[in-house]
Length: 397
Image (cartoon, rainbow, N blue to C red; front, side):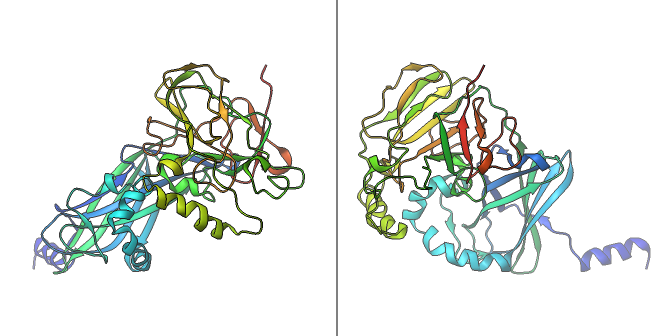
């Protein structure tokens, strides 16, 4: 047997995986992933691949075996993340009954991005055996990098096989960037504030694409509480009524000021009890989410950067759509309109006028710094702020 025949024999025993024409990988958001700073001082950055859909548009059943994410820098793989099907199966079993409903796909579209990853006519598969016309979704794959080396691309590769045992693959990729803001931004509040949620992986924001780098900002008193008396009314809270300022020059392109302040928890009422009684009822009464969104202002800045100020006090907004505002202009007051547990400012910057879609953008501020007793050793220079820190505004020369 000559060498050529030996090679052909080996290939026949171990067939290479082939690219499946009907199996595709869809990523959302689909254009770019922005990196975040996990720990700037020691050079750790991270990125979140928000939603991955494996879609079977072929005419045969395909069984998923493995999902592989390769983070690449100049063509070299610098980090690999693997998700084995047998480990993901119990997770999918838990998600499928809810996500497969039209109600969930409408209500959670801003979170999961069903409308972006599921082609028309494709439904979710109850198992990881994808029949023709079905799909499986994987969310929130977080990759962290040390040593100051950042990837420029993430490749998502699906390994699967047909009922006959043919090994197949499906591949997609998405570029990675460190975002550089077009504008110089000032903090939207004045004084000392507590960052209750941020872009860190400890925060619920990081798993929501358009709010990935958003901040929730609260006021905490000397006794460690965010309110005086018993916290039964919005006005009991230290943040309530504090002025909110435009972070840069721009044009007001959206505003809502008619949503009433949300009822506060009763004394002794737990968060789950309050969520069921007040927040759940809010969504049941208005499934569109308009009331749950609360009062807000959206400002367009140079370079197609949009700042969003959410949960503002009912009736406090002092600007209207079309107004030109300067940096530092008061636009409203901190409130608790919409879906929230207590008065705070939900603030974000994005690349689209629709605040619940598009990309959340990581941005820094020129006039704020961490408070030493609450923060890490990374005390100088502009950086992202994390859940659990106190920050305070400073005077600029």
